[in-house]
Image (cartoon, rainbow, N blue to C red; front, side, top):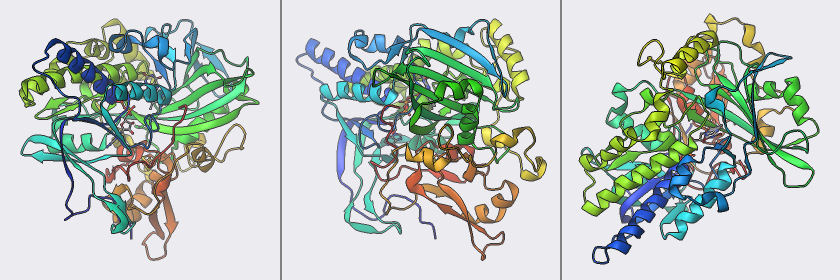
Length: 576
Ligand SMILES: Cc1cc2nc3c(=O)[nH]c(=O)nc-3n(C[C@H](O)[C@H](O)[C@H](O)COP(=O)(O)OP(=O)(O)OC[C@H]3O[C@@H](n4cnc5c(N)ncnc54)[C@H](O)[C@@H]3O)c2cc1C
Ligand code: SF4
């Protein structure tokens, strides 16, 4: 029987008072901590008689090391960093300044270059970075200020008092597969905080619970997502310049799926090579449950243009992560009594530009300014923290996202409709045919096998597991090996399936168990079991999980909840 992870009941937990707890040490969380420290330092210098302390401000990060779970493209728009640390370009790990961009439309064997780069994909002035290295550096800056970052600690529950968030419980350590305490058991801490800031990235587990508890999304469009599957390659010098940026649309997707690819060039580690970051983002609103986003990336690499670029090269890292696509109308209220939500957890991502880092950082800064006021006044009520909402709405975050507020919804009926709406939106400041386009949650687009062609039709080349040739293309387990993923094996499953019976009786027949396909890390398997009505039973390999959250998002019955595993476990996205 599968046992799922949940906090152990009936144990005494260490209590720790805190001023501010930031859950998640990605760009949003780190920028928030750094800006808060800057403001407290400036306040203390100006007010020797009313000092504020940084001692009880904590960042919780589930990865064993700072940045280890951070995966992105990544191109950095420097706008918010120039506000946070005006001299950051002198010392941050920036791989290359963008020198050249191109956008292509791919058919199976050919390509068409867009005669002009659409304005939202113009990247001159941006930097190619590894988000993992960048966040490590930013985390170092936070630690220099005296703020404590607890790595290897996940926020596993929010603490409430009525309608107020009063703190965060960290994960229990040393619990075995059956849910029993091991000899090294350590209960999670209760951090009782004045202000709780959620910066967990896309589909945050605490954020999801907060949104559900207070029904925060009731007036927002449903959040929609894409999953980006990425590989890092070392290629012979001369294939791509450091700072060269390529975007592609079209093949291997058909006109019915939403998504596209990126290829970014960085300097290599040796004189004779370059690093290529390439990946494919597949919108998690496709119809065919047999579609496999890792397979989509493998097919993309078989395109003659990409195959030539990678020929003679070596794949060195792999990973996957989701991103929120829903835009401005899908953002829930971002502040309330004792809490704020930042970055991808709130949905601050510009899907037209495939960029969210600069918005995550800016939202972190605005939350820090709000938290600072709360500490100064010793008041973290909804009225004080609600200022964060107003700060966001009068900042350039809103200006940027407002212009693309209907972008993704315009593609709900396929590529041709999407292109029509995008054109119209560009000339109407983001409006298009109406101010607010509605949206359906991505999983609602998934269709039952009985309604789809048995041979897969136009999508046949994207369905099921990729086999891989071992050189240019890889099967999932080979790719996964390059993600450096490790977890404590003896712990309850952190993929909580609320009704496994439904998997074994209904989903297997109706949808053919899509979890086996959409998970980029082979976590879900249907194994033979003669005692089951369809001869199959769901089985999990949670240790493979790369924390992309796709299962939580794409499951058509919405019965999977991703919760953090024991802190420290997960991928190792060195250089990603
Ligand atoms: C494939 C892909 C390509 C992208 N390309 C670009 C690009 O080129 N340029 C760009 O600007 N943006 C890009 N983005 C978007 C960008 O990466 C995000 O917008 C940005 O990283 C969001 O920052 P964040 O801090 O909100 O979340 P994240 O970067 O996701 O960081 C969240 C952190 O919180 C931690 N965490 C989560 N839950 C918990 C918990 N419960 N307890 C403790 N810790 C927790 C995670 O381990 C992680 O370290 C891309 C995204 C993807 C997926
Ligand atoms: S189990 Fe879920 S979160 Fe983990 S890798 Fe698979 S799809 Fe992603």
